[in-house]
Image (cartoon, rainbow, N blue to C red):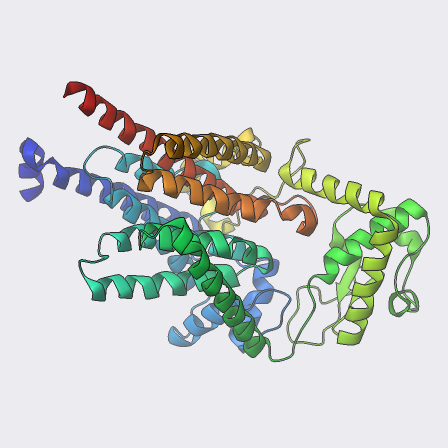
Length: 471
């Protein structure tokens, strides 16, 4: 009855909007839980799940995901991926719930209620990849930052509890991918600007200190978890670069520890060319359960520190002597990742086969997955939007400083989330090994969030201008 009363009472319409927002979020949560249940384990996830069960971690994947998974496995004996799936979806939909609650005075909350249903985001929201963990944790971190702002100078205890939660979530986010350290600075800067309402001048120095501290804590925790079981994952990208330069020069350019092996074959490498790296490398079973139990190619991934250092030095000298080839190769890899030429992408989410016969999957596929071959799933679109928004916001910021107008929180959120997106995607020109949709998942989410907050900023400023004109 309270619900019906709120609808009838125009002065109490805020309650109706809260109910509506919560209802949409709940529908989204239950719908995706039904689609992805109990969570599919394939490829990389199989390796991480095996590490979670054994509680023995190596560095092939950052160990934080397997560690959390392993804790759930011990708390809920007999479970497989179910607790992780629930965690992912709670963080995903919980983020949009918190965002929307901050905007119940008008219908801006619907932007966040419906954002969770954006096809490229919802289609992978229940896939247990580390890329998705990074994204959902960062979304939740930003939502907590905005929520904490309400308690600053009002409820010190609640504010610091939220601050603690936010930095734990950020720690998990940054720890989940090797290359996510590039976003530490803008992510922490966002908290001090948004939650504490500090100026940029004051925030930057504090952010540098906190960023260094977080990098140290992440490195320390990773070293404790892997306990010396280092697979030197970066060597995959090194080998990829050396393969391309070797093919261009038509001679094997690798250190002796690779070429001296009996199974090394440069003819095989030339035949494979620019194909998937799994055709060229394999992992020896030195540290527990591994993805590739059998040999796939003529190059073995080393776990020997001396060999890795030799490979690193060889790579640096080789790219120094072949700068043009290296640069063109990196540009090609980056444009492949951006899907500028419409490259084939791994854009089908991991959904259990038994769920694909249900009416829910049919609805899910037709509404969301069926658009996977459209521009919505192409990272270059979001990078282009990022760059347009960046130049637009720099211009707005310049005009505001010039006219001595105060920048509001919505603009700051738009600017900083856009920076996070750019800090994450642009370094892929050095790090990406080829096209894969999940690499750009965070970029899509941050671009949407930035665009929505900039839109709210324009609405807010327009309202202020209209109010001044009426005076």
